[in-house]
Length: 479
Image (tube, rainbow, N blue to C red; front, side):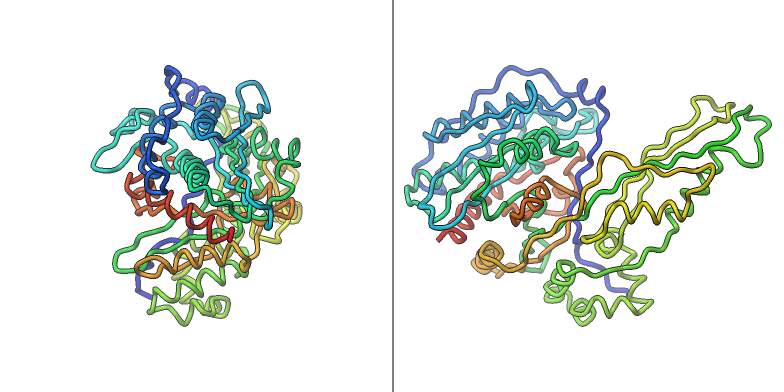
């Protein structure tokens, strides 16, 4: 199996926990940024032409989480919409932690479509950036800044979509709802979750949600790849604690807390968990077969193909592919002694585990305890744990995405995906609303890798094109 994979299915997952002190120190204090007024003509192209300027102003507002402080970003977005005669509302879950809601009325013949994004961003170490994370510089056609892709760029695409549709003045059969939330980067407790828990009446008529989690990928000599993420793995975070007799580093006991933790973690990462090909993953590789002729037969019947040891080893050699068919465990935060010559009484490791759809965290932790638990090693659940979620693969929205892809000059391929990270989509899926990760923005591999990394960036021309595609997609699903 020497053929090289074209792309990983997995989009870059969200890094969910940041160091609060450093985040606060790195986010610069800036003067208030005035909302941009979109002055283009009453055409989609005219509105789209203002995308880079609108996003630049948004990026210059630091909303690093923690601490968040999304209120300035919320006022910026609200001002952008108010200038067009829309009537946005700001909902604060806590002082300074804000969420923006707006609605463009349609005829009501169909249920509403929600465009979802988040205003908070992860920290940025300015020393690692060639172009400042909050300066919004445009260099060689690319706009640099924290949030350019995750998730201020999509938020501007959504806002300009509402503006363009209002200027066109052609009522759609659906209301189009915009929601820009706080706190997504650390779980959404003060953002999407708070809005769903406290103001679900605003979303009671929503049928579909379009959120972050999937872009359009350009691969050399291949058609455009539309990544439509219809499912997400569920996080099941836990803590492993090992205990033993403390002592001096010069005369350690045969077994200590650190050695017991090392042994437990070794068993954990070596644990062979059974693979499972769910319907979303099966659909992804069935579609992917059209662009990888050398493995088309195996991809069309992936579950059976994985029974072959050689193919299984080749397939799971890519961590992003392996994560689509297995529950994963990744030890991350390690805590032990503060001195080299002290054997601590207790050490611990926090573990990031992601479970496939249908797998329960309680059951999984029971298996973990059976594997590594004992008198001196305990396993306890952490706060981040919720079920995996999945939306339907055949409805008006998925068919609209397929129609949009068919309108591309080279007939793009739609790949239904499983996101190995998680987004705010699960809060809506838990309420019975189909949610999908898809932003119709073309990104290249370098841009995709810049999410949560230095020099995050988006191509200005592609940003404008994404506004046009989003307007068209909304029309297709609302007619």
